[in-house]
Length: 156
Image (cartoon, rainbow, N blue to C red; front, side, top):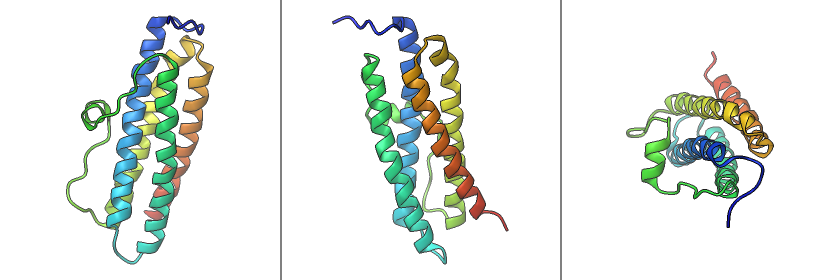
């Protein structure tokens, strides 16, 4: 059935492309955070282990929200590792970094998600897609706060 939600098809396609990149970045960062939760060691083990769990749990919920927004715009959501590898802006992690390097990589990951979310606003605004704008705003708030909290752990 044809979709008639007040957003032209070409603008919906552009929004979906941006949200697909956001989904890939969020899922990639989720996976990286979960990996670090499992593998963190050192004097801050308990603090980081619990912090990372809270962060990956929040992102697990977020990937569903982003994917469902893509579906509501009439497109399939990307959902394979190949899709995410092609769409993400977040670098892979080789081996098991130190706890400090984990924190640093997670800051960079959250900042990447923030940049991706911000990059989608122009097309969302052009299409009058308030629902996607609201979702992006919520994601920005979470990732900016998380990046700030992680950055604070790196200060002397």
